[in-house]
Each structure stands twice: as C-alpha cells, then as structure tokens.
Image (cartoon, rainbow, N blue to C red; front, side, top):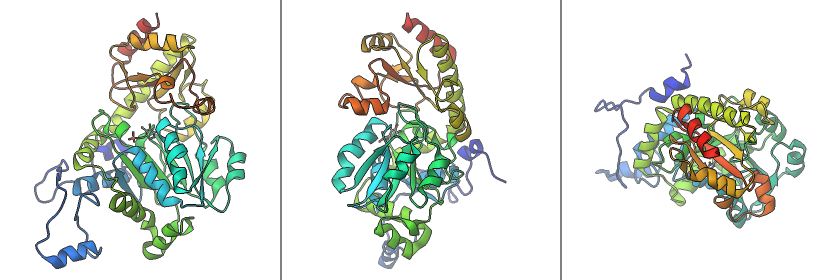
Length: 406
Ligand SMILES: *Cc1c(COP(=O)(O)O)cnc(C)c1O
C-alpha cells in the first residue's frame, strides 16, 4: 500500500536505530570516522564498501535526511547541501559546462536571479532568460547545447506557475529542474509530473523555524542520464547508470566543492519534516483566508488560490494547496512602510515557509540592486509587500492586518 505523505512524515521503514532503538536520528557531530583496519578504510575510499570517512563527503545524520526526503518524494535519491543556493549552483555546475547554455525563467527569487546573472556566466555557461509561460519562446531558445531548463514551481514573489506537463513534453530530452521551495514535497508531486530534478531550500518549509539553512537536490529517477548534455554526466552514466547525477552532485558539490551541510542542521531539518504535511495544510488554509480578506477589501492581492490569479486553474490541477506566499500592493513605498511598521505578531524579515508569518518590502530589500527590467520580470513594484503565512490563528492575523491598514 502506498502511504500518505502525512504518515511518511513520521514513519519510514528501517528508520529506528537497530542497536539502541532510538527513534530520533542521532546527531553524529564528528568530522571524521576511524577504521582500525587499514584495509577497511581502503575499501570505503575505493567504494567497495559503504561507510563514512569524512563529514564533508558524507555523514550518518545527513544521510538520514537525504533518505527521508527521497522517501517522501518517491524519488531515486537526494543530496543535502549547505543552502538552497548551494544546491542550485551545484546542480547547474553538474548539468552544464562551458560553451553550453541553460534556459531559465525570468521570474525568480532574488538570490537565484543574482546567482544566474552574476556567477553562473563566469563558468562560461550562457543563461537564456525566458518567460516560463511562453512555450514558443522556450522552443526558440533551445538548441543542441541546451543542458537544462530551470523554473520555480511558484515563483517568488511574482507567483508565476509553469505548465509543467507542457514544459516536459516540449523540451524532450533536456532535464527540467524545478525549484519547489514554495510547495515542499507536500504541494507538488515531481515524480508524477516527470520532472528530472527538484530542488528545495530546506531552510523554508522543511526546517520551518528559522533554525537551519540548508538545500536539497532530488533526483526523481524520471530522467535518463545517458541523454545528459554534459559529457561528464554521460561518462558517469556509462559507469554507474541511473545513479550518475547523484554521484556527480556528491563528487563536485561535496567532495570537491565542500558545500556540505552540518549534522546539526540536518537534525533540525529532520525534526521540521515530521510536521511538514500538517503545517502545510494549515498554512494553505490560513493563506487562503488572508488572501480572501485582502481581496474583499479591494486591495490588489496575488495568490494562486484566488480565482483572480491568472493561473488559478493550472495551480488547481498541478498543486495540492496553494502555498504560503502572497503579495499585496499598497501603491507606494510610504504606504507599504506604514503598514509594515504597525505589525507586531507579523515579523518584518526575509525568509518564508516559516512557522511565523512574515512580511517584507522586496523593492527596498531583496531587489534593491535590480534594474527596472528585472524588477518588472520579478513583478516587484513600489508598493508591493511579500507575505508568507505561518501557524498563527487566522483571526489574530486578520485583526492585526485590519488595524495596520487604518
Ligand atoms: C530562499 C530560496 C532559495 C535559496 O535558499 P537558501 O537556503 O536561502 O540558500 C532558493 N529558491 C527559493 C524559491 C527560495 O525562496
């Protein structure tokens, strides 16, 4: 029987420590692992035996987090990184090489936008920006050197949603990489939609209490890595078949790059995951209530759960729940600042998918360096407030918003 996600959040086969009976994953707070017999260490180094040698490369607590996420996603495997951005960076570095190109949605979280604008081109990879809903343009940009297509599942903060089915069909043998930070495993089923790679900033919905930065790359198992455009992945495929991408992520990102997370952060993320399904359900309900509240007042509000959202029908089909994020537009920076200044329960800070409700004025913060074109692509205006809903009572939130609007 296939278990529901809520059950899988607190249950996994073989998760209990067979020696001690511990149900919580122990925090293996160690950099290295000793092997009294040199032949044993040789065998682990050479991959003949499984085991851990050094926590930059692997660690039992981190391995448990990776196993847990692969299990939740019904995926082939997962690799944990020090942050969401380290996860994205490593994925692109593994999939594309100098002289190749990637097609990237122009509606992105500001940190990802900066990574693709400033850093990825330094690897000699051509970044081709596109409106991810414009399938003709995507087709026109793709050539035989296109190594990946990248989009967020709900873009932060414009709330653009890609038609994943049409994208996968349209791009054929090119891997589609989806940043599903805004839905987590609960809101979007990547395997069912044939997505090649899913990335999460585990800082957000997974850890959920502003306690641990982290990122996860998931290989869904849907993509044939023998078709990868990067020769390095193809030669790994010739050696180890389906595990080529996972192995290359570990080799380049962890062994060589050192973008590993810490055992403590992996543990905190595991604790967060136990309540993921429950929290997500509650967050989506409250977000819907709050969005409807602003909508009823005639304040411009963008939320995929509202019928006024241009892609509401697609969101309904593609997602389970509509996520924690919405934006309202108060027209001017002054009005936005006045509103934010009056909030007490709601925090003025960056981060999202947290247990706490948060707001931020993107134009003066996350996007302050960005030019007019990029602001427009990201949907950032003078009076825009980004809001991410947490676990507070919807009544208390609405009461606070009502007061702040006066
Ligand atoms: C926060 C965020 C990231 C980056 O994750 P970090 O853990 O902060 O590095 C990437 N994508 C999206 C959609 C995000 O919201």
